[in-house]
Length: 522
Image (cartoon, rainbow, N blue to C red; front, side, top):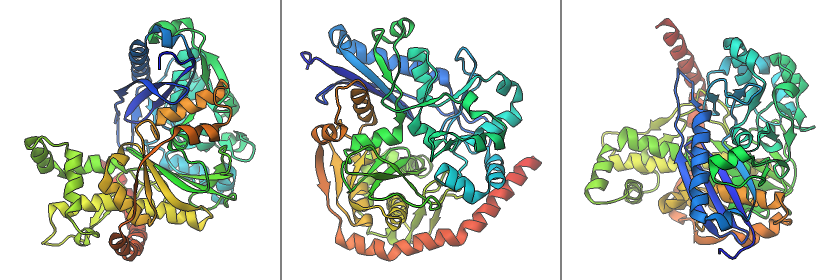
């Protein structure tokens, strides 16, 4: 490997950690490192992260991989690309200093502002303008909240950045944005791919002034500075691409290359990608975007709020005995609950779980949805809840996929990557839920930083034909077929999953509003 001529670095700044891979141009991982990111909860519905921690973690990761690779390889790094969680609101001053913690996608304090913007523009016109459903996760309402409630800080704001853009700024000294994340912010006119004057007028902000001009993901936005090189172990002058969202780089990393292939990046959240031969209507819960992969003209990408997060919550809230048992027998607790879930028949003995622990994005697009167990009885056992959590997240995946298929998407197989792909039980449930084979990828494939490496390689000319490179470098290690008996059970239960939530939706909204009023009285 050390004799290779070209190396690339891909980094992903996720919600729970930041990770980077240094790879050669044959797709071999030379060095990898990660650090944990922490969430900050300053108040109800408020979720933030520290940009200083992002950079501390990023610089530490760079130092670790450059030290592991050695100076000869570092001298041959031809490009860097960084992706991140999205959407983020990080205001910085003219010198690039953060003015407050970043409000990340999980932050839902700006629901009132979201409804105001939708009312002013008209819901249907706003959907047509931004190419999707308004949601509290996005940027216009966060900017309006910031302007309304922190006016002194807003007055000092020179630019608002995404998470990856901040790391790019620290590496290059350049404030940047990329078109991919720009199109996801809901500040962009999806038809022109420019910041929307209409959105800006409603929130009273000149978006062209406060948001950097968007670049294509493979555009070189700058070069590693001498100062950044000293902090990271990199050498100065390495080209840095604009990068993209973790959604886009996940899609590349899964090897999706033709119609009929779907993929899920299954981590704390899930990102679902499905190709389509034609553009969808813009007034449906999940819409298409143009796709740069040859043979896939358009792509649906649908975010699900809590997949791996639901399992983590379950272990924290209800898995004390599981942890004790696993520790006592020298087992990984996640492996143990996989085995435990396999002992329960499909359908979890009547227990159904709704994984809306943080509201839901696709296909519900509301922040008032809440997690629920339904169907318990006096003979319900602990392991029934365990399997129900696996199945509930798979029902949510099916809800997204059925919505996409009804809008023209094609799903003949599902590639799963991320932490969720390590669970064979979960993968078998998903295969049976969707009635398609699940493809599990090799260790490097599907890893989000691998997608960043692909972008970096294209940006500097090492991978001129990205589709060809994806087919050559992405490997499948196992195919899991549906269990026909399980699939028959899920076919019967799925309509109840959809109808039960639909019947409870208005009551959950009233309940959320009641809690807001009660908290105001405290």
